[in-house]
Amino acid sequence: MGLTRPLPGEYAEGYAPYLAQAPEGGVLALLEAQLGEVAALYGGLSEAQGGYRYAPGKWSLKDLLQHLSDSERIFAYRCLRIGRGDATPLPGFDENSFAAAAAADERPVKDLLADFRAARSASLELFRSLPEAAWAQQGTSNGRALTARCIPYIGLGHVAHHIAVLRERYLPGLK
Image 1: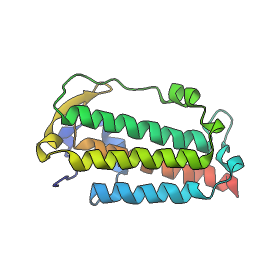
Image 2: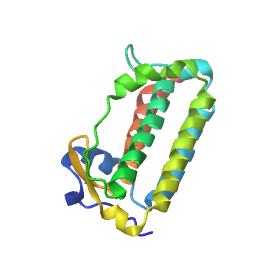
Image 3: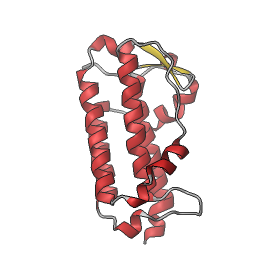
């Protein structure tokens, strides 16, 4: 598959920060490697550590992992719809409402990690299955234009952003 990095005209400026966070290289291999990185960060956490919040009112580590799974599924759905030529504008989502409703702190860390693995694996299978022509399909998500080709890179950048936050704000508090 010739899935190459999107060009600026393929996406609205609102997606630029996540695309900027996506490292250079083959996006599918990077998505797989990132799955391993998330597993390494969360795999050794105790349940108490999973409930850690770096400040009052902030998400716990479990909430953050649930957010990654929820977002992964939403990005994959958007890619499917746009890649199949569906031009219906797709809505955004309120991540804070999702986090509150998910009650991630009531789930074991290992289950949340298994959920993320399943979501990322499903995304990878979808991305591998799309025909070459699908990647150039254009759509609208959250009021912003983009091509299907942008979505794997947005997902990669989104998780990279949260890994950076996790390392900067969460991990120092666990020591």
